Length: 122
Image (cartoon, rainbow, N blue to C red; front, top):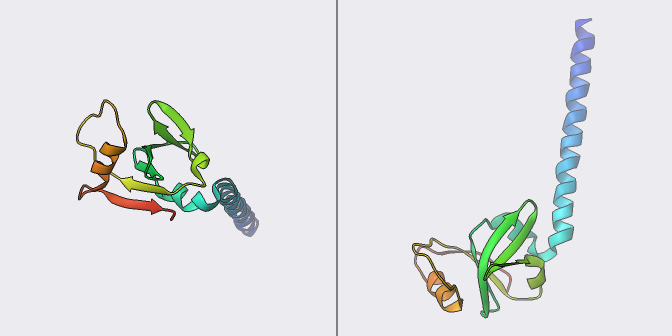
């Protein structure tokens, strides 16, 4: 009777392990299919990172579940709308409040010594 319990528990643990592995594989495939060349960006960025697009636009990263958005002037745009653009993402430490955040302030933040480049696609 004891051997039957051990075998049954082993089978259950094995099946749960297989299903867990498949679940994480499917999540990884979904991210790869959705983000394509931005797959590395998905894994590396976090909320509040500075993003500069084509040296013309700038904003901050916002993550909601498995989606990444760029916050620009109180407007959220999906990161996939910038897939054809040159994108740079920086980890910044912001010490002050900006009333209107534009490319000039973004360049100043980018050039600070505490700022680190996280992602660049060009």
